[in-house]
Structure formats: C-alpha cells, structure tokens
Length: 138
Length: 113
Image (cartoon, rainbow over all chains, first blue to last red; front, side, top):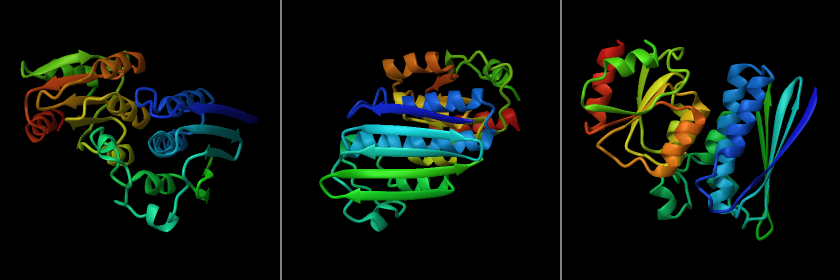
C-alpha cells in the first residue's frame, strides 16, 4: 500500500481550517488504520494546518500512507520561523489577539505536533517558508 | 453511559442543539473542561463530554478530530452559524446551557458517574 493525498490550505480561512485533517482522518479510518494512529495523525496535522492559516498564508499538505508509517509534509511560503527552539516551547506564541480570541495562540501547536508524532523535522528559511515533516509509525 | 442516554437525562437547563447519528452507540465516561482549542486538541479524551464557552467552528473541528462524545457550550455563550452548520455536517452532538462551566460539568459528572 502506497498512497498519497494532497491538500491546499487556504490562508486566513478559519471556517475551513481543519478540513484537510478531518478528511485524512476519514480516509485513514476507512483504510482500517489503527485508531490511536488515526488520532495522532489527525491532531498533529490539525495543529500544522492551523499554523499554516495563522502564520504562513496557507500552503500545501501532502500525506503519504504506507504499511509501516504515515508521513505528513506541510510546506508553506510564509515568513519562516526565526527561532525554532523557542517556537517549540510550550506557551510561546506569536499569534495576534484576533487569533487568541478564537481559542488558538496558546503556544501549543508545535509542541503538540511533536508530542503526537514519532518523528518531526522543521526546515525553515526566513523570508522563504517552512516545511514541517512528521511521521507516525503504524 | 451513551450520549443518547445523557441527552435524555439532562434537565430543562440544557438545550440540545444537534444530536449525532451515533449518539446511541457513543459511550461517554469523562467530563473535560477547557477553552483553549490547542489544549483541548491535545487533551480532550475520546468519548468525553467537553464543556467550554468557545462556540466557534473550530470547537466542532476539535470535537470531530478528538472523537469527543458531546460538547456543551456553557454560560449561554454564542454558537455561531458556521459552527452549527459544521456540527450537523460532522455529526457532532452539541448542547447549550446557561450554567457556568463548572456547574454544567459537575452536573454531567454526577449523571455519568
């Protein structure tokens, strides 16, 4: 089994944010992927998707599914992350007030992504964009 | 207890906004309180009753992704139109109450314990 799914994440559209994660969750459930792995993928991808909407003018998410693991690649052309170590700290956030009013911006996004995946890598270039690659073992 | 049983046991202080088709099969055993969606995303247990004052479309998104059993919007907080629509689409049980978060959670806890 080698499957690939691609999603476009629209910028600044909070009514649609999370749709890609909801869709991949449905697909994985149909494929009988173990429940806990589906939950991990859905949570990690949702956080990434929200980050792309808040910080990066959207982007592209590609999900690869094979028999041993699921890989999510979230690529954006946003501003980049100046200090990745700081961004990984729970509670650190640069989200503006209007985002906080929606219940986001608690500085939990990247830490949650790390917590719910088996591997996570951040490639970021200031002014060019960020690619986050996450892997969940099956 | 099943979500469908809970909705029958709630008194007049609670209003059922939407019931999932799966309410008769979804077992609930915990109550979870939180208004920050990223915390809820990480910590809302599957099959929980989540009590919050955040009634936007992303609350429904978090419920769907964490397999929550039902969400209660407390303090008569507004559930916006998009959130209502999404709850129907995503098959999420949504309940509203004028009770504060703690009292709503305590009452549900007493019903399911």
